[in-house]
Length: 499
Ligand SMILES: Nc1ncnc2c1ncn2[C@@H]1O[C@H](COP(=O)(O)OP(=O)(O)OP(=O)(O)O)[C@@H](O)[C@H]1O
Image (tube, rainbow, N blue to C red; front, side):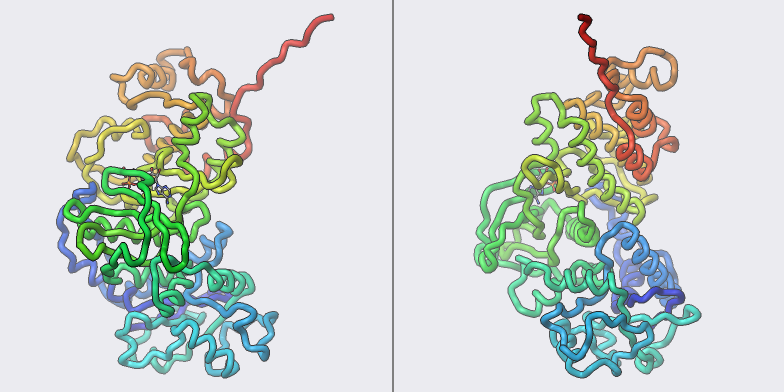
């Protein structure tokens, strides 16, 4: 186990778990078998060859992540919870900004004790606890990045430091609702920290898949949806009476690696406000028929159902803008994390509120992969597939690229505005697409009629998302800026009556 000190860290602590160091090695030792869910390698390697290198790069990545999260306005991810007002000892004033160099020892005993009891993570690392999963190490800022050996790390003083924002975020996460999948007190305490990226990243992948007697813990109700790889059911957690959605993956058909990967991406991404909340824990039914994990329940509908309900009229400019503000924020976040969703479609965008589209979340991270991963093309072509995917044959290798998400977003934009798809397949064999491509390549000056109602700026958005030249496609950020600022429909000239 090593401890890494990091320079220039603002008043924030960063936590590494034992797995951060062992993970790269563990991953390398995994068999590189082919995955049926289009991945060539279920587990890609992190690439860093020695532990020291790996520890340093993880620390750097996390600092970078912390900055990114702050810029997204997300609750600052932090390794631990902070006591809420009532849990704090009166001797510590909430207005105090903890000094970055403040050693744990100097905190008031009462406060420290209650903190330790509640979170059970402020343990001083002992040689034995260094191999324990729950050991958390806090890094203190130091003038230079340095890696320390086990023994040095034991001697090293840990420090707590929270900026005001971080403390508020932690307080909120500490008060977070109980997670339905857990039963014991200890579990509840640990899941209160689930908003922490750092905890998730390092520890969850090696968490065993727990066997759960479904009947005992949940009342499973109707099916909410089915997909290629599994199905989602509405359920009630018996203990908390909370309604949740359980995503099931039938066992013989699902590889454990695929299940674990989907769970990890779902859980890792859930702190974002426009990404479905996934509760901590991977489970399998006690009769071994399915793996499952638990997500928040969306009581309303998917974007697909919302658009279908308009009878091909579309949801209108204002609502489209609201949906896209949310979706693009989520996708921009994923892309900044070098992840590509790869399965963006109206069914995977969930609308939580009845009328005003103010709560919209992206779901289904089953096909999510890192940028530049090589995958096998196994999916059937759908309306959202980019031109380059439609030209691909089954089993052909592809390199994962953000631009496929941008294309899908262009299609979803058209679908929201017009209530139907621009074409069935982005292939020149499909006439509507061929017409669009001819106009795009200036081989035909006539814009296909279906694009007529759109403003110049909206047309630019189409040109920059639905272009076969994937290198020319916009980023999610460009799309977000355009959609936030510009008018999307041509203004209709109203004839003034002549008197
Ligand atoms: N948390 C939820 N609450 C309510 N409905 C949901 C929830 N999650 C998913 N659904 C519905 O269930 C459908 C299938 O879910 P999901 O897309 O996650 O399954 P999948 O097997 O990964 O599907 P796909 O074929 O797209 O890969 C979704 O289209 C959505 O309408």
